[in-house]
Amino acid sequence: MKRETALILLSVLAAGPVSGQRDAAARNPSAQPENNSQQPRPAAPQNSSRKDAKISVGPNFASPSQTPELQNPRAGDVEALVSSALQRQKQVVDAEVLNQAKLAVHPTGLLQGTSSQPMASGTGPLLSGNTASRRTSSAQTLPKTSGGAPAAGDPSPASANKGGSMNTAGSGTINPPTPGNSRFGAMPPNTPGSTALTCSTNPTMRILTVAGTPGPVIFTPITAYDLYTISGCSFGNPGPDAKAYLYKGGAFREDLQILEWHDNWVKLSLDPKISGVLDQDDVTLVIQRSDGTQASKGGFKFHAVRGITPLQLIPSRWAHLVTWSQDSKSFSPEYSSPAIIDGKAAGPSAYVSRFADGKKFDPNAQAPDRQYDSYDFSGLASGWTTKSAQLKTFDITCSDKTQPYITTYYERFGNWRTQWDGNALRVYLADATCSSFDAAMPLVNKQNHTGSYYQLIVVAYGPRCTDPLSGKPDQQCIQRVQQGLQ
Image (cartoon, rainbow, N blue to C red; front, side, top):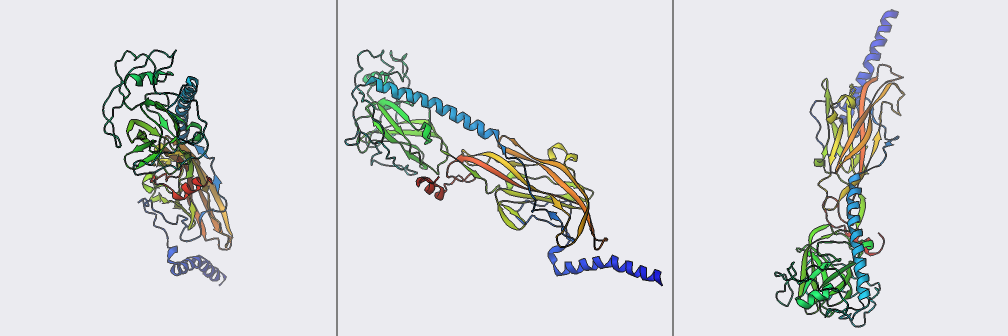
């Protein structure tokens, strides 16, 4: 009799958890067992805090870990190259301004009543696009120079230049300079007095040098480098329609603030609050004198003021996520961006989870090119690059606050780390496996549940107040810059 009673008791204990689980599954359809087929799950935004269907298991959101923020060397290298070019350019401009001051000869003049103010662009015809706000801070006026005959003691005359047509406004066609074979050709174009000598042999309105060089330069509103000089011929007298601006097609237009205007030399700058504009190549510089006649020169660059922002979204097409399979078990990714963690919005940039029931997966046992997820950021908008990356990781847990589960086995595999390769990022994977049982019901147990969970946060660096993905201007950011709040 005692033996029969023991057998009945054992059968009840064995069947009880199973029937209880069936009842729970019937009450909660979402608790049905997962389909761990070998087909990888598509990368699509969804709640990625997956749990085993039978008993609570999943990431431990209460105790996350973080990897060190890894800087992208590419961002630093690119910015160092630009800064170096701008620094060299500034040295040339500073030297030219000093040389013009040393000439100390009579200028064509400044606008009446504005000798201590930057001269704003006039009211002539405008192209469509962005227009910079006028800067009203005072600017020191240098001694005046002349666009006429050379002063006594000047070096030998510079080369005369003649050339083809350019676009004009209101005064027909004019000729920009092209290299000639004049007897003055040996004189550097930025030598003090050389511009006046060149223009005395050919007074056609044209631009000879920008920032002291006949070649292309970089225009930027970055305050440390925001000073430019333009030498040329027949710029005439300053007036309400005299202006200088940059443009490219009909989408980019920025007026230059004129600090000094002479017949053959102009000093100017850009508004330091220019925002919401991407970097530009092949930009055209236009000088328009007071009678509306224009001279232009192309091939310049525009380098925007920089800003830093986390990437809110990493498009799924930029993410290449690996799936591991063994013995009919798959360790496949689920992806959300912006990150959704435990059913809640978690901010930038993406969240990736993997789970396997009853199987260990060691990243180091995979092929070398299958040990990491990769992200390609080459699709960022013009001028944008990735600056840094950091991981927030979550271990798997086999315990449950509502029931006294006892962990009998726990092992971690692999090491979380990130690695930059230009504008691409590798996320080397790690995971953990656990087993446990219910102390109140020893037959309820978890065997080799394996999970891998990480949030990736990528910080981007690029043109201020533009979207890193679309390149579109951020109007709220622009407003903050204009108000001096950013």
